[in-house]
Amino acid sequence: MIKDRIYDAFTAGLDRKGFGQRRDRQVAELRGDVLEVGAGTGLNLPRYRSADLLVALEPHRTYSRRLRARAGAAHVPVEVVAGTAEELPFADESFDVVSGFNSFQYAASPESALAEARRVLRPGGHLLAATWAPPEMCDLAGYLAALGANLPTPPAGAPGPFALSAEGALASLLASAGFEPQATRDVICRFDYRDGTETLRALLSAGPAVRAIRHAGNEAVERSVLESVDAFRQADGSYAMPNAFRFTLAIR
Ligand SMILES: C[S@@+](CC[C@H](N)C(=O)[O-])C[C@H]1O[C@@H](n2cnc3c(N)ncnc32)[C@H](O)[C@@H]1O
Image 1 (spheres, rainbow, N blue to C red):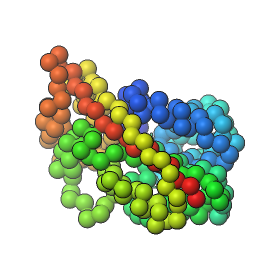
Image 2: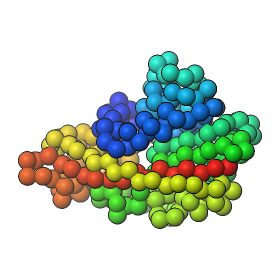
Image 3: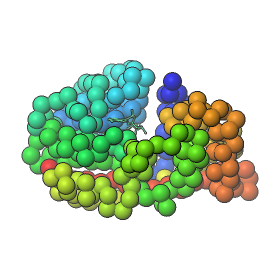
């Protein structure tokens, strides 16, 4: 089971940095009927201020439970719907905005996910996607590679954190899906942890880490994760890892 509460702590740490401020601003501005794809545990819900309706789509049952629990505290009406980005359970032209924060790259077929997003958007509607910037801009890349080394080899082209991160990859997929890509903006967010214990608690809470532990055992995964972040250990024993998220806006 994914440790959804710990995952929240991990993401909250991320959100304290630039990623959170950027999300605050962008999400607060989204208007009309909004669909958020892969809404996770609902950390974005309180950020919506101007939407008429927020439909939060999430395939994972454990996350959906947290999402539902959070819906009541949102400032806008929220509907939680089970489903995947590749097969949106909505009629054509149902939304003014489709958003996805750290989620589109996990779609088994990003092409289908973007085609579906376009189908359910009204003409002139906006797509807003936040994805990891290229791995060379993310110190977390070594940690993700360490997890990968403790998991069965994925098939070529499998979805993952950096699936849409190559320079121009998302913009070109958007254009192929019929969107007009607009601005992209990178936001640096530094992961700061007090010590090795806090680093492990945060980094071992994400879904791929939980799967790696199930596959290779706690001890092996802890060891390779600590090795992967060793270069970022500061003189006082804390860890600091700069990473970049890329926000992409496109119009239907
Ligand atoms: C890293 S989490 C991000 C969650 C949330 N958007 C946030 O920023 O806190 C990735 C999310 O994408 C969801 N996801 C994975 N595959 C998906 C798919 N095919 N369609 C829609 N969502 C998906 C996961 O269940 C998870 O909630």
